[in-house]
Length: 158
Image 1 (cartoon, rainbow, N blue to C red):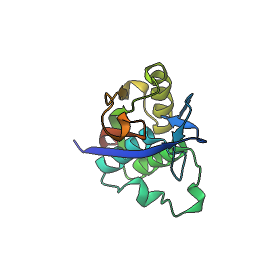
Image 2 (cartoon, helix red, strand yellow):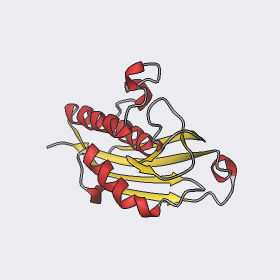
Image 3 (cartoon, one colour):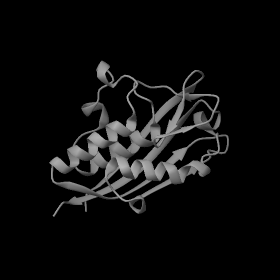
Image 4 (tube, helix red, strand yellow):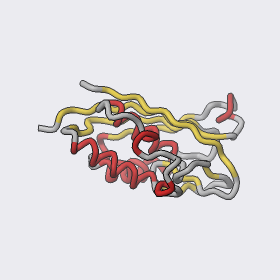
């Protein structure tokens, strides 16, 4: 059973929208990155790609390529799902954690699961998203940024 691990981290800054799991979250700051900087979706994509031994998102969607500037990470997730299918894989399960001091994310998790599942071509029951507070510790605890961890397993499509 091939398993992949994904991790991503982005700083927070004013003047940006906060996108997590394809959902715009009301907040006074957003994550900074070349795309929409959706740290959760990025970690999930890396986990899925890693499970299938297909590299990482930086390899497939490099920040040096202008076509990915500001792109929706859900669109990139759709492309990852297509790549997986083309290589004969399908996603079995994804489990992810967002590490953030604020804002409160739990009300948004059901919508994140729906949007991520749709983009990846799986059922919402195949994806778990959790939010954890760093309890004031480290960069995330100081509100300087957010991180996400994800694990995915894939199986050969029959």
